[in-house]
Length: 140
Image (cartoon, rainbow, N blue to C red; front, side):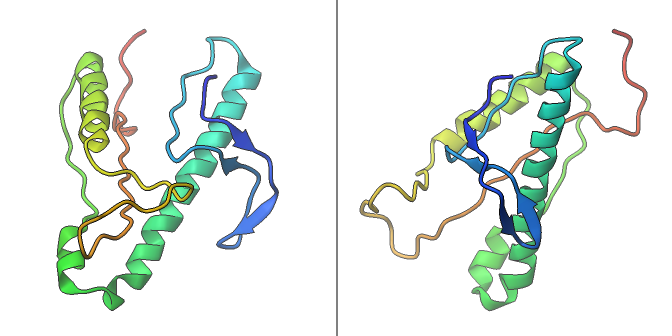
């Protein structure tokens, strides 16, 4: 499994034990090799922790949004769009979203802020792309 490096830190965040800390601001993983059950279990544990972090961030926004100006609440969204795609189209969608996000200023706490437009805030752009789990998978 190739992933952004993670350090085991054993800290507690939002009432959950966090056993890893991202070494980079973005995380991309590859699937483990077929038949490597140990790597598959580690991959699943890591993905579960990342998904919990995404959920915590979304819950945090939901709790804090009423203190934010209307323009920020209007600009934010929790949305999903059911699409009917092939595996190749799904891969292209994922790549297209990553390309779109790459065109925006990234937040890196290690960097000193550059000149930014007035009113700039850190925004969490989360996206998940996966087949609807309530359907029958195609034959391999």
